[in-house]
Length: 324
Ligand SMILES: NC(=O)c1ccc[n+]([C@@H]2O[C@H](COP(=O)([O-])OP(=O)(O)OC[C@H]3O[C@@H](n4cnc5c(N)ncnc54)[C@H](O)[C@@H]3O)[C@@H](O)[C@H]2O)c1
Image 1 (cartoon, rainbow, N blue to C red):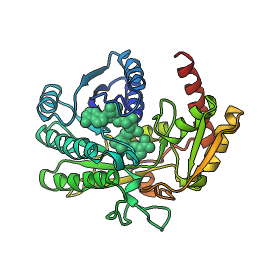
Image 2 (cartoon, helix red, strand yellow):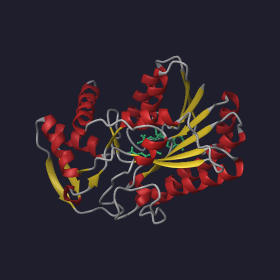
Image 3 (cartoon, rainbow, N blue to C red):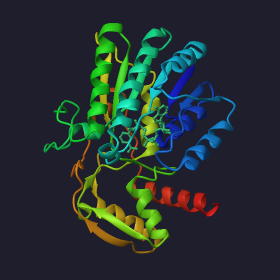
Image 4 (cartoon, rainbow, N blue to C red):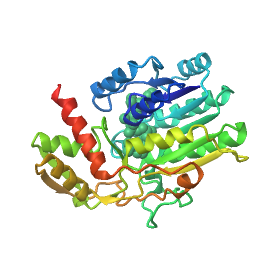
């Protein structure tokens, strides 16, 4: 069985490849353009780890390059595709929307095209986001709730992916599944996200900016729980007439950002030098996933306790950056 993971040098892509490689019968193929949105050395260290496994094969390809992408699909004859390559991040989309247009719209279109033209592909899974719910006031957020009012271009690009995929599932009968991830955290996590930024600021005794005075309420989800769910989903494409599905993937246990910070401070045994900042433009105040649909149709999502998840991150961070 051959699985392609795009964005394999990214945070979630790396963990997914690692998990798939534990299942010895799977050959894992990774694609990434290794862009410099954040520290490229972190991406390279993830790739170095994956390359130790003989069942992993890497190709440096930009999903915007349709010629290279199509050639790669033709040669490798994948059975399953998980598209995690994208320009991530809510705030950066305010500064650089074009980057989101390229990777998330054009790049995603190329992945759709390559997947429908290779008949061996049984299921295309791709990353969407909780941001598609915008400023919804009804919680927990269900897949059936309104998602037509995105607050940022990042959210708009991900909602567009869902809509594009639905049309491909209808016309070409390509089974596709959108996963709306809720704030994923864990070891090897992204330097632009709260856990990394808070930990780094506290360890280096630098100022730490707490947006919305820490009153964001977030459904933080541990990365192992996410990748375990994706592995369960891979062999279960929709069997409907239009084989398209959308699922939330979250912990369904939201906490306040200030509480998240407290846990980090307690575990590091050190206080952060906090500067309170107002709500940032484009930020939603609350996320809380309903995971009933995934639990019912695919299998129960594992729940790693937030203290355990943060402790795993801190251990990794201290080890990884001690070496540098
Ligand atoms: N981490 C989260 O909390 C979260 C939440 C919701 C949705 N998501 C989505 O999940 C996916 C994975 O997120 P992540 O946190 O691992 O982000 P990440 O930035 O760590 O990983 C994305 C990877 O894709 C690669 N990439 C970007 N554009 C590319 C292109 N045009 N061609 C080839 N490779 C490209 C990057 O180099 C990177 O290694 C993304 O689609 C993201 O939008 C993440």
